[in-house]
Image (cartoon, rainbow, N blue to C red; front, side):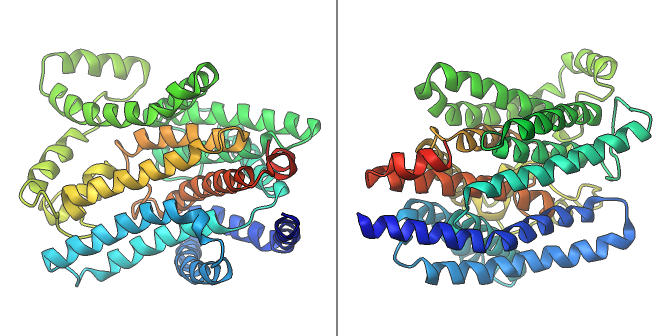
Length: 417
């Protein structure tokens, strides 16, 4: 027991030593978002840092595996989920004879390596507060830009090229501030509270309906948690079931008489068509997927590969995308990975930051039914989303390990609760 205590303290001191590198890594993640801004001169640099992030994740993953080789049993369940999805994808590519599409598979591996790196890294308690300060500062700057632009209340993009991108980025900043909120002092909490209000205002001004629903899901799930932790644990099945219902209902509804009434209502109150055009790609994508339902085709398949002359650059649905890439086998493995992440988070719900990540994950599960951000499409946004999930995983696993060794009061409560 004493040896364990000294080991944990040594890690804590070592974590502080690497805190500067952690902050630099976080700043790079935010800089990556310049790929989505309208500054053409900065896009080249952002594309470079994105590639750097990918390959740094691969190197760091190997380093952390070697460094923490005696502690990997704590992460066994996570590796089962990640390894199961990756192995299934590789097998389906082999069956289809599509290993020549190896670049997409390589980047998929690096995405998952990035997630595992964040989960394996020993974060110190102050780090989340520092991340929150940086994210909060970004919200203040974007809010200033919103004021300069005349406080637009619809399709606010700031320097982004698309209100959907600005909306999801503001959401990520909002969540990052929430992660450090509980650990901050009184004055910092006031500072963060103002930033959170600014974030909500800009999310509203971006008029991204998907982000509205993500926030609603986060709010409802937090209320459910306060009522019953048992009900909260079942929300994963509710959201995933809703995603399946939404996919078929939305596509069917577009071809009914009700469609015009819904469209008129949406244009009047949300200034957007109720039907965004996703129904025009989901149906042909599913039809194409049914031609190879078990194993799919290949990683990073694009609409142009099955819809000639289309203007769509992706399928606007992460689950359909995985189905096209590796069939039902890959889709089940991907859902299995999401389930593993969800189950691990359940172990650390006594920690406020983990509760935030769990609520965010539920919203993210829905978001993936209308957009693609976890893999390939919005690389910089995807990194931030995996980053948030990885931090939650680390905190939950570490808290569970401390608790199992009878040290909950020594570490878990003092550090994170």
